[in-house]
Image: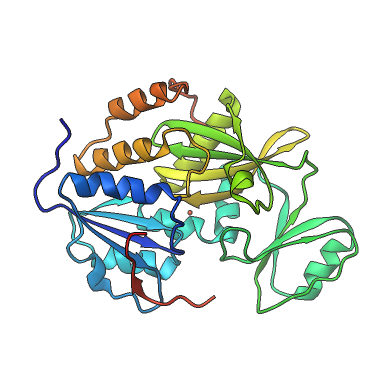
Length: 302
């Protein structure tokens, strides 16, 4: 029988409130049934540090880097994290994410970082590009430019200007929980729930190794890696901390077991291995080694 110590406090902070279909509510319900005290908060510039002051487990989902820094400064020394504040803050910055992946030798699109919108237009004059602001999620701050397109710049740079990789129209979205890697094929941008769920994808060893390698670069434990199929193999175009895990069979159980392992002070994956097999997925063996206005609000359950 699964138990947790009395009085465990779990704090979850969202960049955006999850929909009623989100696995987050199922995961929290499992912990609440074990007697945990749960708090969920909407990310905001003035989110008080006291939110984290008595937390045993802090879960950060698509939060601003400043919130991650506040959590790190305010949480008690014994708190455990998913994901760690530094990792969460780093992958929230698309520019820094690209830099670190490139420095680690992982496949990313060729890119330049520019501060002048005229430089963006100059690059796009020669080839199709993808222009990204440093901060943004769920497609926000991403502009596709065909060769010769003008750049409708808003705000200030820097901008990450990546060569557009020819593909087949499908994103390979790999979701990682501990050592487990699951994939879906998804159109981008996904508009309906069916498109967000995508099609099942069984990652081969090379794709799984890339996904786990990306996690090692940033120190992530539950995360997503977006890839597209390049002419020389998969290319990483995005990394995000604690995504929605849409389309992953048994995702709520896998995430619950993973978080429970954090609370128990270890990282045994026996329970999640069992859940993985029950979902009909392969438990991976050892792989070769290769982050609008926000209003503060305590969020109710749906």
